[in-house]
Amino acid sequence: MSYHQDRDLHDALLRARPTDTDLREGWPAQERDDLLRRIRGGAGRDEASTAPRSTRGRVALLAAAATVAAALVVPVVVSGGDAEARAELLRLAGVAAEGDGPVVGPGELLHVEGWSLQENSSLFGDGLTLDDEYENWVRWDGATWVVLHRPSAGWTERAFYPPPRRADFGTPTPRFVADLPDDAAGLRAYLDDTVSGSNSHDEALFVAVSDLVNSRLLDPATFAVALEVLADVGGVETRDVEVDGRDAVAISHDRFVVGALGRKTIVVDRETGQLLGSESSDPGGRSRARITLLETVDRVPERVRADLRRYGNGSRTCADGQEADPHDGTCA
Image (cartoon, rainbow, N blue to C red; front, side):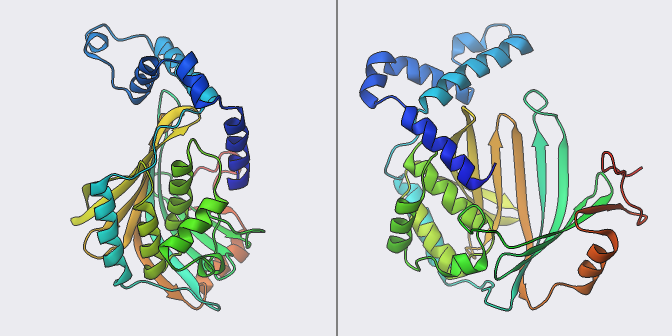
């Protein structure tokens, strides 16, 4: 689903949402709190002491809770950020603004290397674990060359994506990023007038900013401005983590995903203020992504272009150079 389709769906749900007065009269606060606690998985002492329900029962319970939550689109955050999280984000913004990082201009490409690990739920998904190593080249207009390798499956995929018809927060380009306001107040005002959907305005703000950040297209100054904006978004939390021996800060926001609670996170190096990666979780599973190289270059390597010419766009080949199975894309 595209960013705009997702936004339109949420807009429709929001228009159907009852007023706060309707909620207070028809759904008492205690019942709302109990439902949210069950969705979060925080069962009370009495529930924890009983025998586990069957798989069918657990699915039915979550499905019922998800249906109610999706229908009512109950906001799970309120305006006004946590003071400790705000202070941490403003400190990180100051560090990021003074840091080094690539700035993509016309005639240049952003070269990114990294890895991701997606673990799908066996209860609400296919139970697969997808381990990927990737290399991307993003041109000024958003045209992108991708080399994706999945070690566990033994194949490598190559693809070229043309520039998006319309750049936005979900599909940004270096050109789009360069035209964003260069101060926190201006960017926040722009976001306030642009974002929509989600379960609350704060959630919509976090989703837009995190999508923008995870594109890796932000130069240090713009990244610092984005962190300043997040400092005043309600529901944002920070916590100390360690990434490959580096002290880092996880910046998170809870959100409803298809009626169930999920969490979206970006991870920033505490000392350098650089983006290290992202994380997400919901009932369908969890994922992690890390950046290992970020630089500007003036061309896509000839080896990548040659492989695209040889194998074709979207091709998937095995370690021996032979094409993967055309039916399921696997290697023998």
